[in-house]
Image 1 (cartoon, rainbow, N blue to C red):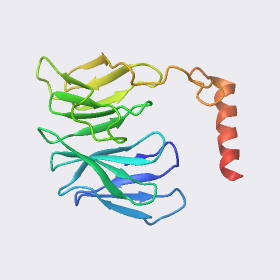
Image 2: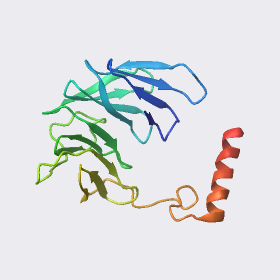
Image 3: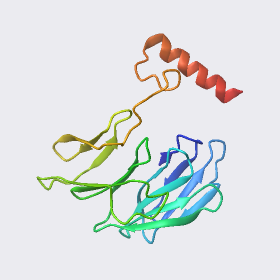
Image 4: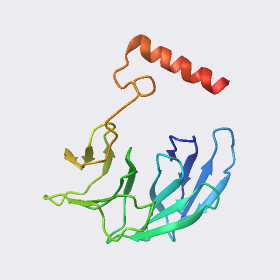
Length: 187
């Protein structure tokens, strides 16, 4: 299950290859996207909320336009079955399988021939999960017995709006932020 930061859509992947999209106020899916021949391993939304990127057991990463058509835009093949997929603040897409992470730049804007970067773990340890660090160009990776970070240039936004994303807020600021967000939902 993944939530779109831009528009609040919630996606749920299935073992039948579909991603069901829900709005915050609906109990039934508003759209079901048939993404893969096999189960959906991971998926994420782009920051602008226009695209859904999925990784499935059919060794593919697919890009879907979810503005109006819900159709497949691009498909990329992976050497092995992808396990995790994440989208960074700047739209960089990371896809992991076994001991490798492929980073794709602008893969949903136009068809790319090669990944932007490729990271292979030297000890051949299996990557359990990874996550982009907000506002910093680092990716954290978890393995069975260890945690590592790697530097990925251009994966994050260097600037943040202190009124929107104050990452250093504490106490009173945090309470005010939560109350403000609740009031925005009500109105």
